[in-house]
Image 1 (cartoon, rainbow, N blue to C red):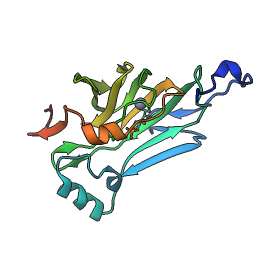
Image 2: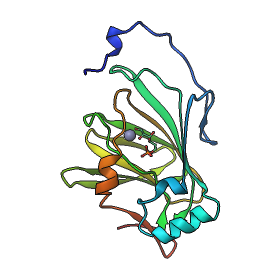
Image 3: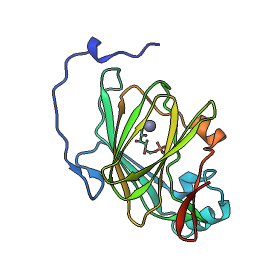
Length: 192
Ligand code: S6P
Ligand code: ZN
């Protein structure tokens, strides 16, 4: 079924939202997603190290805050993504990563704090990674799966914006994985 677009709906009223740029939060967020170590099973190279982390208290890995808008073409969804620092074995903490369910939709990430990478891939075999530091904007074009990786010692905080109808496709990435991964080698991030 074709999703409605904003033009076929009532005109909504403008609104404003306060964002904690350094804390990585959105005041009044109605959607708050938190993923813990135990939610990341199957994503890291060192499964035993992940299980140790789960057994040692199952710490929070990342959070996403959203004040939702209608999931209709014409609207823009936006969020704050806060990825905490750490390693699983030698692999830096990362998000699951996803394609968009509507694959021809792009996304903008503006890094507000921390350091890391936006790791990306296409289904036809292309791969890329862009550095994320405060003030750096990464444009994720349509058809590119994307994952953020925190290579620093503080939270990696980003503001993201994408078409509201985009949705998330986690299934393909859960099976395909990303060809590029970021490991700590001699204390430094290395993309392998
Ligand atoms: C949504 C956008 C972000 C991620 C968030 C968590 O399109 O890319 O809000 O959802 O960074 O990552 P993931 O891969 O677990 O959804
Ligand atoms: Zn996305």
